[in-house]
Length: 325
Image 1 (spheres, rainbow, N blue to C red):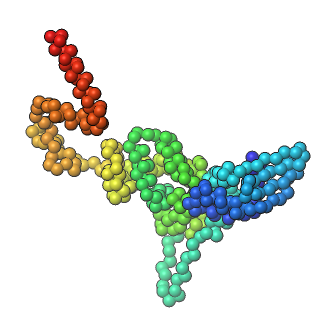
Image 2: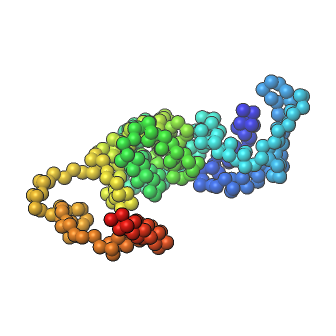
Image 3: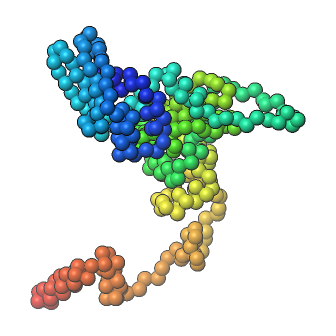
């Protein structure tokens, strides 16, 4: 796609990439791109050797012009912003070397140790990202609020890892790049890592000691999270309590610690967790009164007109029944 090549060829693309690492809206990104490109342009050679020109204007957008054969196309700023965002999400806006340089330039400075304070030699750290590192990143979840409970709920519905992988892709990529799905993370041994998502996977690398980038597909992430849930390690006690307060459907046995208890005797009231006092297993039957019917109708939809229509229907049919007798 010719527009993609032009966008990747822009000298200031590192500044643009840095801007998208913030939680920036499409509207603000459009304004920033207009300011970044301004009124500018340059000659351009197409893949087939034809000559042309690329022009930028805050009023119109990007214009790509070919001299021979004569042709011209203009991409407006909202469409241009959307395409830049997509290229970044796919991991194809910067080259691997440029991405490596960005990550290196944005490592936080490590404070120097005082010379007179003895520092124990650290244990040798692996240069590769381990499964424990992946588990740590997913349980920390970039500090996002409520997302782990939404993910946890998917595992209570009997969905397969493939189905949950699609949910994870939408959950993590739906809002574009931001601080809740990319950036620096803490690994299992306390070391520093760098992470970001593309369409197919999570990419995670160790940054404090160097190391290679690990690619974890969404299907693999779905399986890893399932294992964490089965082991009771995905949600913290506080997060699990919040989930129970907001989700009333029963949870799978693997997600809740099993408690062994003897079955209650037949004449023993059944106790519902959280119920005070215990709810009897059986309730003596009693005659249903008109007041009960009125209350049930109002609770049904709270619509008094609807109630009157039902009452009129019942009265008419009762009258018809008496006539037949």
